[in-house]
Length: 397
Ligand code: AMP
Image (cartoon, rainbow, N blue to C red):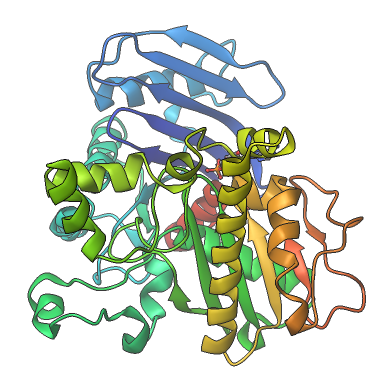
């Protein structure tokens, strides 16, 4: 089956057309600056150069129209007609408590997604626009919603409740949801396959370390805890997000700086994390370079980052009464050997660590712990689009 995977943001739209049998990406691309002047469409057919076109896209319908034109284009297209697209898989950020798995999109499902808008006001409305735009242009093609939160719905109450008055959970559904679920699900299954383990009898800690970052504890194929919370702000330090902090800091800084809660929340989302701490960059490549040139703040930032990852690994080992494997994935986890090494150096108490030689790997599946390690440490590149395509096929067929 050919599945079009759509990841729609408020002003951007990423897509991949995937052949689910061969797992090949037939074409992929990105629409940027939708609804803003200076729109840009980039389209890369498999095995060919990227084609960039400046084109204004007043709305998402126009963007989807251009994507479909690119896919069916005589010269740079990869299919003959829209009929060749068997299904569309939409990435949806927040499914609240309504969606514990991927779901065929119907009018009722759209309503239920709308009801989660409060929980992800920046993302869910954009995801819904992506759905309605595709429906307009491909009314007869089945569509599936794949939720970032769904995989984490198996968490027990003790893991997802916050220590605040219970009525906030009852009235407003304030609780831990977790994100990057498609990645945690895919990577945990893949790790079991690589180690020849039955995923139903396998405990694994997945460290998804990208610009956004989260860790999860997966026991017997089910998520039992994860570091992101009601929103993707909780947990690890990230590129620009603060992660965990004392909630009283908000009022303290608001008073000192005479700023509002929403300004402070914006700072916690966009100006904090490794960018805020280092004062340099949200990109780990810049931080490593600066550290190697003697920049003390870059060094401290990297140390603080690795320390927090290691603390979560310790916590989740306790949560599962041990773990059978630890996995690194996403931009930093797949590519940044320094961060992996620094985290690994904390894990000798578990009888494991990162082997310097084996850690010289980038962007490929690998076992990076020494052969004699009690708990294997792996690198497993994530592939959220392929996971979305697979979930879509499973529902449509
Ligand atoms: P993601 O959000 O998964 O795309 O991850 C983005 C992060 O991955 C950035 O902080 C990058 O610094 C990091 N990253 C990507 N490629 C590399 C690389 N080749 N070496 C080191 N870090 C990398």
